[in-house]
Amino acid sequence: MKQLLGKFAKNNNLLSLGGNIAASGLGFLSFVILVRYLEKDVFGNWIIFLTLATLTEMIRTGLLQTGLIKFMSGKDEEVQRIVVGTGWVFSILTTAFIVVVSFIGYWLVKDTVKTMGIVLFFKYYPILTFISLPFNFATWYLQAKMNFRHLLFIRSIILISFIGFVLLFLNQLSLELVILGYIIAQFICSLVCILCRWTKVKYIKYAQKSCLQKLFNFGKYSMGTMIGANLLKNSDTLIIGAMINAEAVAYYSVPLKLFEIMEVPLRSFVATALPYMSKLINAGENGKVSDFFEKTTGMFTIALVPFVLLAIVFAGPMVNVLGGSGYSESINIFRVFAVFALLMPIDRYSGVALDILNKPFFNFMKVIIMLTVNIVGDILVIKLTGEIFPVAVVSILTFTTGVLLGLRFLKKFIGFTNKGLLIQGLLECKLYIFKLKNKFKPEAN
Image 1: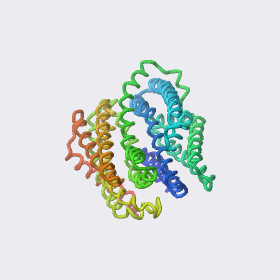
Image 2 (image 1 turned 120 degrees about the horizontal axis):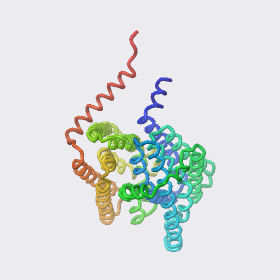
Image 3 (image 1 turned 135 degrees about the vertical axis):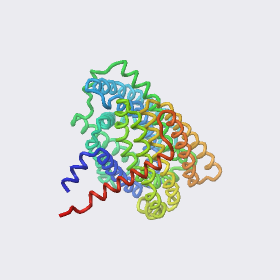
Image 4 (image 1 turned 180 degrees about the vertical axis):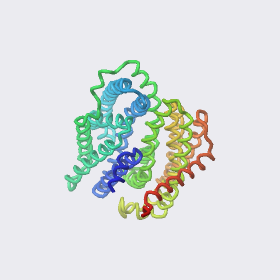
């Protein structure tokens, strides 16, 4: 057991996976509590608030995260200090801009918009974005340094704090109280990051104007891609909320939360792939990027198949466990989500590869085209049917578009074949199975 724990602590892929499992498990728990203790319209408004907060955070994250990792990975300490210090200047300027816009937005919507999730977003987001900056910057820095053990700790502490607050006020929960708990959890996590010296704010004195320009030139496309990707994920929720009602958002959010569980392994390995591929590119080893893309993308696509089948068969019990019997309308929506999960590995890894190859414009274009397909499709099916199930079906068309575009764009810059994805993926799966068998094989006397 001690040997296994030692291997776990040294393996970045396992640490990243463990961090995402812990975060998703705790997030799942908080979701279960809120979905059962809040009225459907209140819960729907909480989802709208959370969607808008996550989407707006993508402005800051998109401008900085990928650029910070790209320009830090494999570089010496002096270069890293300059990049980190400049990143802090950039993030402070971006945060100040977001705070001002949010304040203005509140005065524009408070007497004109009836959806409370939107009004409370503009009211509380200026506070939220300011206090979450140290926590967010620490996660970017730790990912660039491939320190996934500390990332696991950070992701756990923020959700434990939030769940603790919710349980403390469980019998008097309201929308504003839940939002307050969310803000307090972010504050606690930021404070921990500062005390543990994971923010590296002291490097701000090394900031350089030339580096700021470089980060912005890369980040403007990365930001567009990240906002577009987040909009892609949340556009269904926002359009349903605008065209139907908050209760329909609640029905849609249950299978969406279950779908996030299927995303956990993919998110975990993509997180480790980003700095790893950056090192390869910075070392001029583009051929290894191609091999890594074929093996990893093919392996994940193949490995997802049994999980997709299980999700389709057991969709009913899974939805009932999360949302209760009142969410039976969500069962078939989750089955649709399970089907298009098979398209996610190629879509994600092709996007990461384009960014790391310093071709963020192509990734940006891919995401924008996908977003356009999704928004147009959503509006069309809601106008024609007034139902939420066809909205989920549109997602299959959206991600098929993303896969085709991602592969086409990427082939311009690295050599790989569609057949190679399948063959290398199968070989990688066999290799992992062989390694697992050897680990659990009893030792000969």
